[in-house]
Length: 232
Ligand code: ATP
Ligand code: MG
Image (cartoon, rainbow, N blue to C red; front, side, top):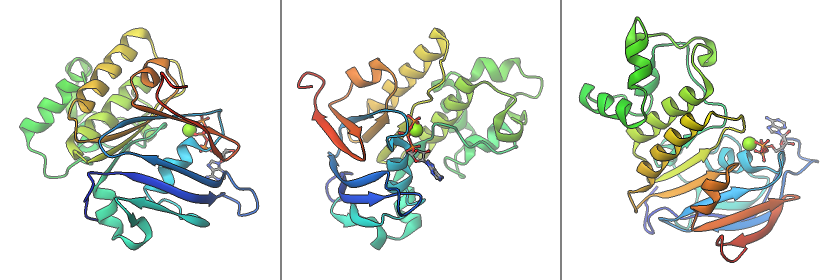
């Protein structure tokens, strides 16, 4: 994949369903401009997380195309595609390994210094300091030994280490306490500060939506509305 525009993501007449006869996206088109912050909103089950899975090519579309900087993602080397996209999923897939190993999935060759810096940027240092085994603590099956907010911060740390030009952040729907939420938002802002990145947030929180350059509203498999916060 060669980023000639800096990471524009375009869905062009995309139809997709997990069961072919029940489309979730139905002839759906939208553009996520390079370098912008875009929020995707819509009712539960409208296909928001599906968009992320399709862009990462966990599934292929039934018809239409997904283009990154005008290249059909089906014609791009899969490893190369995935190197360009960072993802924080709604339910962070953590492995039953240590915090350190889980972070390193972002970039295997990250130095100890980079790991340390990342931990402090996502504000996991306090948690790690409090654990008897520190960064070598095993997080448990699917990360069940740490909280939802901590899991998402760990996933964000991974994202920071990966340093991909296009990032998808699928906000957790579960309520976080105010403090954790503030910490997450601060980290998000930090990631977003690098203006060259394309940031897509699948948004459940008003704050995320208010911060976006563009909002895409999904409904019944299509884009119902799009524009800036001000326009909508
Ligand atoms: P939420 O706001 O609740 O996260 P969403 O907009 O992200 O919802 P998706 O996860 O994209 O919704 O799911 C869209 C639809 O596809 C839902 O009806 C869901 O039940 C269905 N679905 C999701 N994943 C699968 C799967 N792996 N197999 C079959 N159906 C699925
Ligand atoms: Mg979802």
